Length: 396
Image (cartoon, rainbow, N blue to C red; front, top):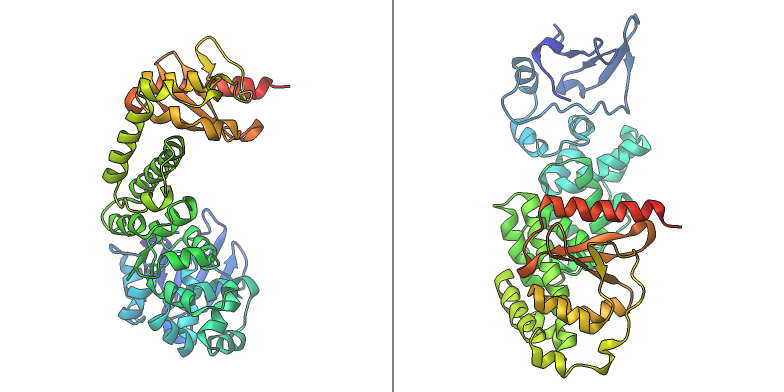
């Protein structure tokens, strides 16, 4: 919630008065820092004010400049070093400030473990802890406090928490942080990092295949200079390449495949290996000497053919598709036979190859590529999605 001068003023007692009656039907008063930032509210047209000791009004009191003159004046009573530390937290900022105003223990924890304080404030808010309860928990050893707030009692998790860097400080990041702290594998992956941006945590959770340090280290450095969406897109490309190389390595009978792939640390290295193996799989000589199962039918595809979208039915058709389109789909024999994916030949609006994963209501497009792995047009995406939607709605 953004505060501006028309809605805010300071009272003679130094309280911050906020008038939201025009669109929320409520007025708020916040006492000064020296009085513990007590929150009072009054409903429109009510004569009396009520103290709200457990209410989180979702007020962003400390936000980056520019600030209104009223907010600047009100915040002057709060220590500037504390303001800088709290500014990164958007979610639960007001109750955090209130506990910091009331308890020296909260201020000490903010100085050394700000994210642990954030997690603790969230639990205190949900469970409506009073001042004595909060003080009691804040005086506990840090592993005990972490177990209370997250359900984890490990010093490795505490070290991980100290290194984590929030970006937005919103509820999604708090929820993500709580989940990742419970994941011993994720904590172990970041053990050598000096700082762990939230973007890297999103990558670890969304793409658990990325389990080797070189890739994560690269993404960590990219997170400092690129937008989160770009980093996640890069992580997705890593996953696609590693999956494709896994399929191709099995098709080519590459020994020690996992160990070999972990030697590659950059997208460029993975892409060069991908292109070499793809060329080998798509050569005529390799196709002619392949397994005798090449004419055995694949499992039935999840959706029926249309005039322009036709399922690939056997290995011979699969290899022909990969050779014609010059991409690695020719190596997808095993995941197709295992029922993990179905491959379709798309002839219009553009010549493309489509991969569908899942089944029934959970069917989704796992890959959709033109020749040489180029991206399809918007019209092609629309045509494929319309075909999926039609058959999903009309399936028996």
